[in-house]
Image (cartoon, rainbow, N blue to C red; front, side, top):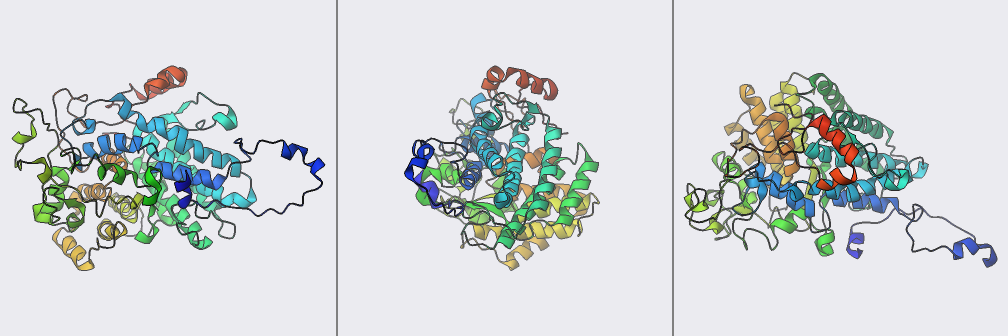
Length: 528
């Protein structure tokens, strides 16, 4: 755990104490200082831990590997696999599909709930309290996107409330409460009161950022999350969606890449603090050492290549040759295997098979997959694309759809420099791309959300959620023999089987309300 302290500096409150005679210190002397208690906990440490766990569990990225990569990255056809990655072919693995649920509650949610419990009502820690409310929404937002109805209002209260079998709240209620929480927390932030120190891994990375800037950035993140959640409602409740989206825009959103919400990892901290996706895809399980484990998908490479997208030069590399030249890149088609000549889906039978799995492109680990690289959570590019769609719907968000779209593309390309200084895409290259691929309103929903998909590279949780909401890009599913979904891309992940036993009453209530615990049961906002 020492490595965690390299990126966490706990908030300290100076306290001067004049100790009387030792005979009056009996209780203090006889108190076990090594025993954990609410009073001995450091709230900013728990805040940092919640944020870090949100980027991937410290147990070798358990849920990141299984849900973000094995399922979402493959289903969204930015990655491809010819072996055991279930999401490539929509196979059902209950343990993998439930892993995010299993890890989020004892780690992310436990830590952030403890922070809120300890800081609530403390005037000195008021900013940490309200920032933690925003972080809590960010955490639950993803979890609910993945599973739908989940324990929410009673979650994480085993210690504070002795609630060990929390009820499952309906996703509709969860989303409305999250919007309320963001609104209240953002309004309550106060730049004239203390802010978190280095424990704020998102907006106070160096520990010396001015309080005004920290508060402003967290407020913008809150409203950008409000925009994202509001847009999730576009099909199920468009009136409510418009109300919250317009409020978010009027309140102030992330408006530059310098305001992107991301965590910059520490490669010297071992598995505790490194970038989780990088740890997996650039480590011993990557496609260089195990060809076909996690190649870039043909769908994704073709999109970048046929459009002369300048991001491709920094996105892909050919393991066999080390080439990063865009014309040399070849994406692996989804839905194939290495079962030999007797298999109709053996990769050797795929169109344009290069004869060697190492000739299929993989993510460029020198740019995208550095162990000390960033994990992006909410970005300027994503925000602008959501505004572009809102504008196309006729909602009041300042500019028209084309303006927001162009700004989003520009931000997405300029963002690459935050992965590595060498990944600079010039304004000339960006303008050339926009000129060659102008926004066309008749195809606006497709263009906007396909660019959103591209801008969610590595954050496949979000790519999958926005795809389910919008229907774009128009991915062609694979129908591999033995798949669990009838050849359709899954709509949700699975609750852990342990919930049916340990929290049976609440679990069954969720099943009755939402539908069977199936990969094809849509969440509330997912109306096709």
